[in-house]
Length: 408
Image (cartoon, rainbow, N blue to C red):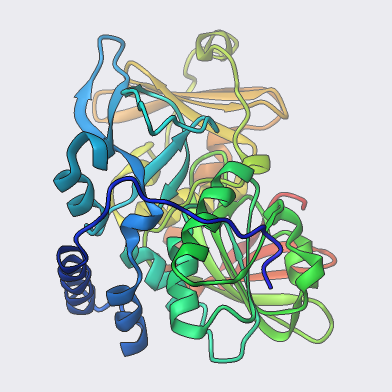
């Protein structure tokens, strides 16, 4: 039985089931060709679950910026453009459904200018990749953190059945809409408004925990609610916007360990782990003395659009967990609101000059990590192991100094 009250959803814009079925079939074929279907059962689920039921409205980028330089997002609904809405629902792309925690009025949606995305329908290939990486088997009890639109939940229900699946979301409006769509499609998982930081004790223990948001550190409640031998799949992310996925296996003694997973996957942060506002970067920059030394590494090492830089940004973040990065003109700034430290990197021809202030020399710590990474032979993500014990959470590689995640 679901803990969410069952309600009936009424569609104001009936969908041609033949057309929708053809779009679902085409999506399944393309996902299969891309190699992201864990098994044939997931392909069958894609062919059955009507994604449009879970995305009655969403935003897509217009590709333009407004006069203030903010990105412009255009609403897409069946009432505005039925063909565009239905076609986009079956593209392998993320559909943004909420900004700044504000629930849109999909009866009369407005164009968005800027804003921070706070909910979305994750692109189907990533949804399937997450479910596949979690190594779920028939009969497993599963906790999904971040119901969102409910599409991911529906795929899991179609693949394994609703029994044993619990899905939680911190946003009651999001969960209400997901519940409507899930129940209308005949799925009945356990649903609850709850903060993923604390898991969901009433349905614990779980064989698998899968999070569709990122955490700065592994929530201890998730380890405590997972059976020995069970697995936790989540994305670690932080204020430097470095990300890494990890698959942890829980031991009999309550510890957990597992490798980082390859790839460049990122998720919106759990709201309690979102980066704080740091004020005017110019105020921080004013406190940094003029650049005093040449940088051993420039910011491109963690900013380039490569898989290596994606990993390095996460490793660097582990060394300066409360730092944030921003750019003014050509100068790159690191700002740490917890210690009051700051650093500025200024281009000097092909090189960079560094100035640092405060008790923590932020860029020096980043450079130490980059030096150790290079000395270790540029290892890949899967060469790192995360351990979670009562003594803390540590990222380890046999040829590099241990890195610690922020205290839970």
